[in-house]
Each structure stands twice: as structure tokens, then as C-alpha cells.
Length: 88
Image 1 (cartoon, rainbow, N blue to C red):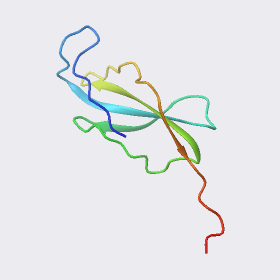
Image 2: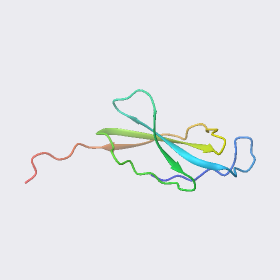
Image 3: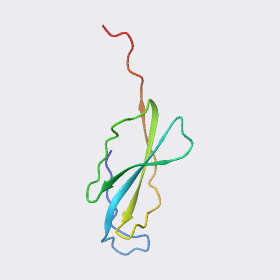
Image 4: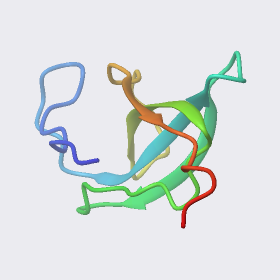
């Protein structure tokens, strides 16, 4: 998945110290969101190396150099079907 890195702080000032983006994941078997990965700025892409069967939902947050974390993005969900059985 990809995202547009933020350019403004919540107070409207320019964001000049984006350090990383946290990627949170929630699967159909989980009730809460879990920190799943950290992507160093300026990268703005993530590929899940081990998606769970079922539905995988993701949210991202921006983290500045001081460690302040933004509110989460909207969730993006992807279905991961079971592999076909008995292929010949």
C-alpha cells in the first residue's frame, strides 16, 4: 500500500521533521489494532510480508523526530483468500 506523507502539523504549521510512519494492522481474528511495522521517512510504501488469511486492515500514523504520533488514518482493508486446494 502507499500513502501521501503529511506536510502539515495539526496546528497548521509546516511539518519539517517527519521521522517515520507507523503501520498498524488488525485481522478478522483480532479486536484491537497492533503496531505492525515502522517505515522510515521519506518512504511511503508498505508491503505486508505475511498477511493473515481473511481480512487484513491497516492504518498509518505519522511520527515526528520528537516521537509525537498523529491520529490514525482511515482504515484500508484487503481480503486474503485461502489458497486453492488439490491443484493438479
